[in-house]
Length: 70
Image (cartoon, rainbow, N blue to C red; front, side, top):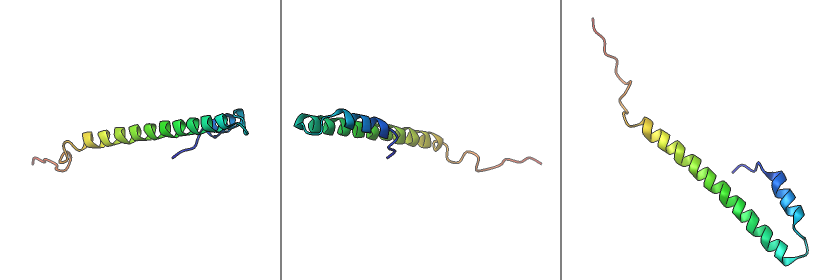
């Protein structure tokens, strides 16, 4: 999984209070929501790639033979 938004995560971590229990719970919720979002995006990309692969395999024999006339 790509962790491209590290600055966003660090800024979210800095904005939460280190001593408050509500800040820790909110941080956990924010992190789990972000991870779930990344997982959903990856699943959608994999589904799109699978769909494209299946569309290309509808006619698997296409291009396998060459018709020549003499």
